[in-house]
Image 1 (tube, helix red, strand yellow):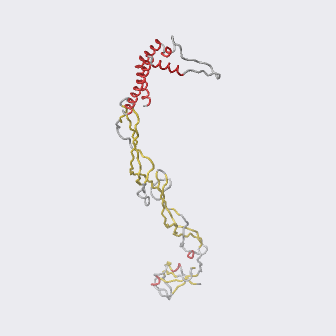
Image 2 (tube, helix red, strand yellow):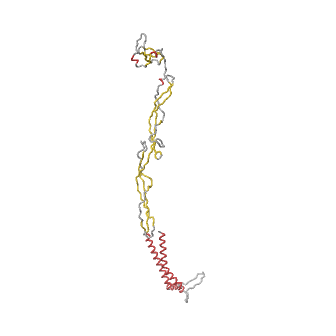
Image 3 (cartoon, rainbow, N blue to C red):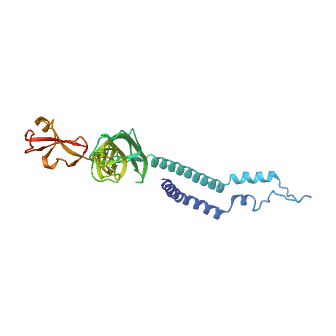
Length: 341
């Protein structure tokens, strides 16, 4: 706008100067043709009333009365009066031009009109989210992949530039930037990978694994049931602390984990040596045996397999089939007890 103003001033002033030039040229012609009026006032047949002399200090003295008379004759000279009128006329024209320039500047300054805007600019987020909610559903007890969501508040801003055009010059300029803000509540989502390892993988819990040493209390068979010095293998159903893990990841990053514990069971074996003391004897005929007792005793086959044969431990009883013993009852079976010879 400053450039436009300056241009208008120069143009307007040029026009006014051009309009004034004929008058100025005419005044110059009069001056050149007729000479300077004050020169005529002090030249010709009249003698100048100016005297000069040199004082001791070198200063020239001029009579004031002579100068006053010269000025009085000059200002009444028609040529001087015409020149003075011409100068005054030019001054008036310049003042009028200045007034017109000021009016033009005011007109230009007041000729701005806002250009209608097609529509507001789109909103864009600004600043950090606030009032961030909790991720739901909760991670606890989740055993397979799932999606979580949460809400948050976000400020948005829209900045629309507004332009205006000068109807006089056609110039366009930025008038202002109109800013609008609004607060929105939004949702955020994420997928949770539920895995058996911290790096991802299959869904759910990992397999149970031992976290301590087994505790074994009952070993079978007992060493007291195996002959002394005999090597054998014992087994036991033992208890052991166990654990399994589960991990929660999003975008490959671990965000949480959990685990469960239990007391598991494991079969353990070991090599042992029997401690049973064997005292050998022989089976002898026991006359107090009865059929009822026979049903509760181990069957040893024919009596020939046990009669007077080594046995143990002492006191052990079996029954066997019996055929004929002279002078003795003849039942089907007899009972034999392991006794010392």
